[in-house]
Image 1 (cartoon, rainbow, N blue to C red):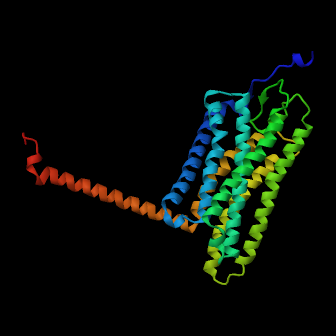
Image 2 (cartoon, one colour):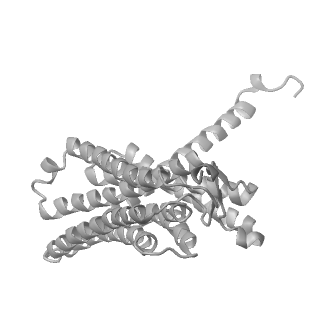
Image 3 (cartoon, rainbow, N blue to C red):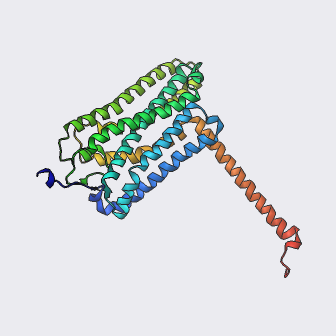
Length: 335
């Protein structure tokens, strides 16, 4: 009899930033432009690596993977947030909410593994340069790319299923701008101890372990680079690795801030905004501005574009001159 009185939740309401009602247009504008810059920056990286033959090496293969994953990662929560800010569409279906949860966790997990692979690639290139191309061949790169998705999809499915089978009988308002595990579990009517423990364990494993692996690899890299006698070689190695380390710190610092605290807070959605909007914008610019090879390719593409544009303008100008001055047959009859 008690179970029959329970109402099943069919949709959730995303509160987002409704408390700042007077700033909705401003928030929409800022987040929209940030989203566009993020997509454009990462797409530029992908296209440069695809068209430039000199960038067809393992390091840039993983960078292009990471850029593609960043585009997918920000595209999970941001379009819905823009719809909430612009049109007030706060409703999300039960199924849609958990699809968003699963997609977001999966892509976060995949990105963390991709950063490990980037660190491992640099570790091989610097500590085992003679065996680098033999070990990090095309087959291994493709297998690693598939492996990260296999791990991400499997781990995310586990924690998502533990949450989806909880009882949700109301309320259905989520104090967040997208469906995330913590806010969802706080709305459950049933006991969430096992689910919370499972989620915390998965979050600790998915963030702390990759972070420790990456730091260990970069400690080895730094020890090797510090022994290089050539100042130019040392500078080049440190330049590449420092860019990767900055991305690592930005990614994992915000993840620690959100997912490794025992109890959430009212500021979680603001931390998540940093994690899902602000941080992804910097990654392509870090790669582009701090990487010598990418800057060189960008410069060459820009110069080639300008030269082709100038040549086209010159050809059009010469054609107009020939048409109107040197070929009287083409002139109108009344002139």
